[in-house]
Length: 239
Image 1: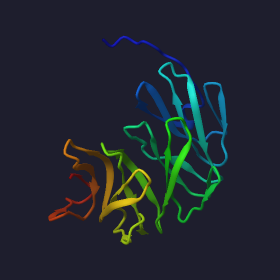
Image 2: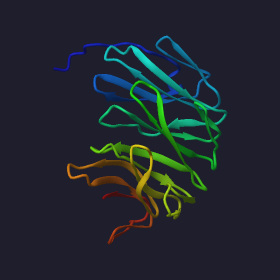
Image 3: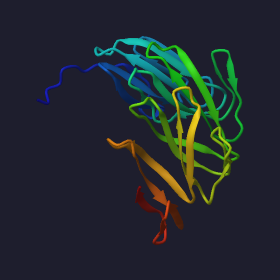
Image 4: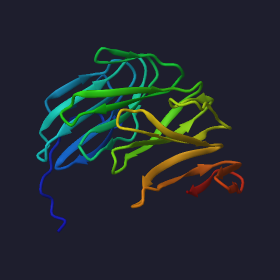
């Protein structure tokens, strides 16, 4: 009926110092984002910035009590990609990073100015799997989701050349290409594709398992046999 049932202050940080997002896992609340201030306080926990911008994920119960929190940082920049949650409550977290990044005993080394690290985290906060995606130029994860079979889709934009784990290396147009990649629950690549001169804004799927994507493009772009020419600048597309 629109009546507020609860309001709490859980964050102590200057308004311009953090970017915060939220998803639901059942009745629990999953907060994630990045902060570029020296410290970031979430409830009674204080995170210390390790470099320029650090990334965090925290799961809270329905009363916003912290169950666990994960903090990722290095001397460079770490910032969020859109999270996805599968039917079992497992979390798929794309993290952008520009330096070396350590996850438990694994160290991932930056190849270009921006790289993507895909993390799979159990709902209890333990790490399950990780996969690095890099390009010769910057690469960004804009959107992601899991389907009913717990297969993970990621969409975004890249510049230069990239490979998602298969036999195909993609080369972008200018300034960026729009890509879609599909992985199983262990991050084994099932399929991928790219579309020249386009950038992704969002992905979802319909009741038949088809992918719906929206974004923008410059000059010309092709989706299968459909060819489009922009009217001068960036045009909007739905496919």
